[in-house]
Structure formats: C-alpha cells, structure tokens
Amino acid sequence: MQKGTFYGIIAYVLWGIFPIYWKWLRDVNALEILCHRIIWAFVFILCLQVIRKDWRWIKIIIQRPRRIALFVLTATILSVNWLTFIWAVNHGFIVEASLGYFINPLLNVLLGFIFLREHLRPGQLVAILLAVIGVGYLTFNYGMFPWIALTLACTFSLYGLLRKIGPLGSIEGLSMETAILLLPALLTILMMAQGGNVAFGQQGIIITVLLMLAGVVTATPLLFFAAAARRITFTALGLLLYISPSLQFILGVFVYHEPFNRARFIGFCFIWSALVFYTIEGYRNRRWMNLKSITQ
Image 1 (tube, rainbow, N blue to C red):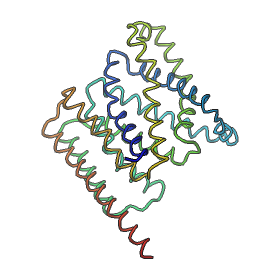
Image 2 (cartoon, one colour; image 1 turned 90 degrees about the horizontal axis):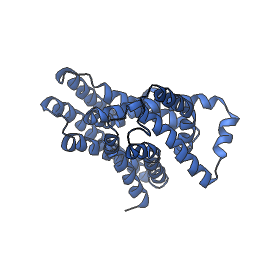
Image 3 (tube, helix red, strand yellow; image 1 turned 90 degrees about the vertical axis):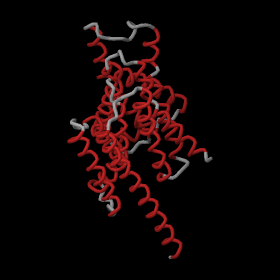
Image 4 (cartoon, rainbow, N blue to C red; image 1 turned 180 degrees about the horizontal axis):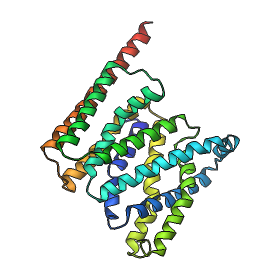
C-alpha cells in the first residue's frame, strides 16, 4: 500500500469515528465544545507552526488584505459545520449526519458546475437527480426535513469550494481560520462562565482534558489528509471519502442504536445508488480519457 493511501485511510477513519469522541462529551453544551475545539485547535496548530518555522503564508495574507475576508467567510462556514455535527451527534442524529457526508461528493459536482463552470456529464446529472429523489423521499415519507444532513453537506461543500480558490494550504488555512474565530470563542466561553454554564474545570478532570484535546482531535486527521493529498491523486483521495460516512452510519445504527426504519432505508438506497452510479461513471470517464490520451 502506498504511503499516501495509508495516510488517507487514517484521515477518513479518524473522521469516521469522531462521533465516539463527541459522545464522551454529550453532557457538555455543543456551543462550549465548539469554542474549546476552536481554542485548542489554534494552540495545537500554532505549536506545529513554531516547530515548522514556516511563516511565509502570513506574508501572502498581508500583501493582499482582501483575502482575509475570504477566510472570515470560510471560518464562519466551518464553525457552522462543526457546531451542527457536534449537536447532531450528541442529540442522537449520527445517521442523518452521515447522510450529509454521503451527499457531499454529489453536491461538490453541482457547485463545480454552478460556480466554476465545470462540465456536468449526463451520468453525473443522473447521480444528482437520484440524490435529490432520495432527499425528497426522506422528507415526505420519513416525516422530517433532513436539515442536519443538508446543512452539513452544504457547509462542507461551500467550504471546500472557497478553500479551492483560496491562497493557503490546509494547515495554514486552518491556522488563519482558528485565529479569526479565537476571540469570539474566548468571549463566548467567558459569557457562559459568568452564567455558570461551563463544563470546563467544573465537571471533573476527564471532561476538562477531553475538551482540551479537542484541538488535537480536530487537527490530526487534517495533517494525515494533507500528507495524503501530496502523495496520491485527487481521484484516489475522493474514493476514500466514503469511509467516513460509512463508519458514522455503522456507529449510529449498530453502536448507538438510532432508529433506521423502512422509510429511511429506502431514502438512503437512493443516495447509495447515486454514489455507486457517480463512482462507476467517473471511473469509466477517466478510463476513456486515458485511452484517448494514449491514442493521440
């Protein structure tokens, strides 16, 4: 196995088992968890940057201050994604959260078509339509609009789109985003502390340590992902994407026993069919393009 593939698997497995970590903090307010995730991620990444001694990215930002606005936007979107996922996990919606990340690759294709003017092939259009049917079925037959799944899918896709056009790498970008969110996170914690609504330092050493380690938990899969992205193709990395929602789905259904009735099963089947169709169509298109390049 290539090192890049190995690193990619580690990254997606870690993201896939995230619910276990947040479940350990289920008695803590989701907003407080988010704030600690931001604060300690900033501290951890800052330490990494000190070790790496690479501050060239700061010059890139200083030279064009308008780029800060882009990272304010990505930081806001990322915080919404993190808060939604933490809340969903700790309120028994891991299965719906996994649905969001199953939808994510298809939404990426749609956003690429809308904003980047990328060509939308007929097979990709069919896959997107199947996903839309699945979401519609879940909405009307399960009796509840899948807002968690769609919020996670939309925020993660928009975040990926904006970071694609951004000037910084994953670690440097996260440094900038957590730096932007640091002050609001600290102020939120202070306000919650004044109201006596914080768990940090109040609910035992284990909870306090888990909150402090939230930064390491956040940054570690990103480091492996960045290492994988430098070593293998984007296509290969994309195929590994399904590891995370699959693990989340397994945890939700078989470990935490979330409801998964017939209506949910049928809705998910539409989504899974869309992903199978999307993957096969993508593989056949890449194979055809490779053959075309060889014959020319």
